[in-house]
Length: 601
Image 1 (cartoon, rainbow, N blue to C red):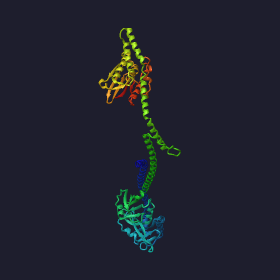
Image 2 (tube, rainbow, N blue to C red):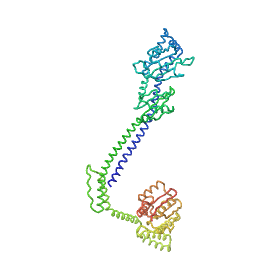
Image 3 (cartoon, helix red, strand yellow):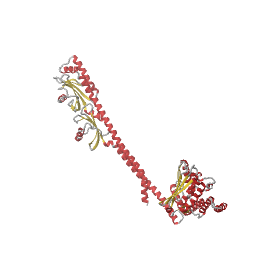
Image 4 (tube, rainbow, N blue to C red):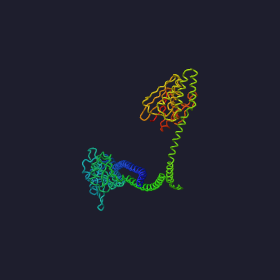
């Protein structure tokens, strides 16, 4: 029993404690993970949009130079300067203006390494930021023009990654060169080029400044799928690069495996440079970090709750078992007739709850000693109450007086008359009432007695009402009922239904047999009752009260208030059969009233 009781208490204590904790923890993890993934997707999309806008600012410088130097007048003058090996005073002033155009962005923008401007000339002369007029054979960076000329039909802004070594003792510098062709308005072909060299590592660091999570990869791909810039220095596997290159332009979100981790990717196509793509890769471990911490916290809380609940369950079970053993000892002592063991008094700080349980148990057991006596007293009380209710009928001397009156009436008239008939019916009623004080009589005898009562009322009221009996004598012959059960119901219908109506009325007494019980209905087509009055009568009958409306007649009708009313009958039915079902009253004003009751076999 101890083990079973412990397990039961543990389940009752821990399940309500752990289930909410587990459910709340799980919901927190799921909701946090979903929100985190949604927020990260939005943040990454905003991030690549910001990178795209910043890259447009980088390209804006070369576009500005292209517009400034792409006018026919400037191209003509620049071509004139580069086609000669000497510079006139006017050309010197124009050359200074052009140097300012390329020196200003080169000096102002930290990511620009140098800017070159070249127009076709036989001496391979060009303008270089910081240097001015130079020739390819004397300049450290000389292969950029050949690389540009190697491209077929250059249009727009071209990009190329290469290295520049300004001095032999310096390490090469990785740059990304942006080429902007200068086209002739006459031929439409390229007659020159503007080249802007950008520090590649600066753009890589610039991309790193946008990274918002540890391990995040920010990558810019060109139209061929090649990597232009990226914030991470680690080598990107070929398989990953191939997957990134093969992504559809319509793909916004995707997953990719990198360094044994799963990354959530976001892609944005450049709005300025056809084919360029901006990609952000975020480790899913970073996305799930908060969810993982919540999972750990939930496990710790559940484990701690389980341990605390286990300890509390053990203590409560131990204390409860101690009380149970005491109560069992009390019960066994009571069963054997031994004196009840002493129960320790609950002093200050003691277990009042245990003391209350034990006290209630002891009181319950002690009450069992009085059970038989209480049942006997209750039975006697009910019998006395029933006899007292039935004793409300007039005493024996009335019967003797009525017999004397009957003979006197016949002596005065010299023959039987209506007075003799009424006195005979009334004498039968009194004989039935006073004979055999027992409360159960055959149904047929109750019907015969009631017919005497109806006969008296019909003599008194003449054609005021008609009484109809509906029953099968063979069906109800074997069954019994409480004495004086029909007369109060008919009296109720007559005095408060038929009597109050303007014309004649009718009363129907219907007895129907069912399995295990007999249904008795007294139906009249009198004045009926309103809903409010019906509720009041039902409440009065249910409370076993004599209702003024249903139980009070004039002095000549039924002996004043001395007749047995509905509440009286309802009370006797319940006492006789020990049932909660009594009278059922239905009525509608202007249509009549139905009073029903069930008589068990």
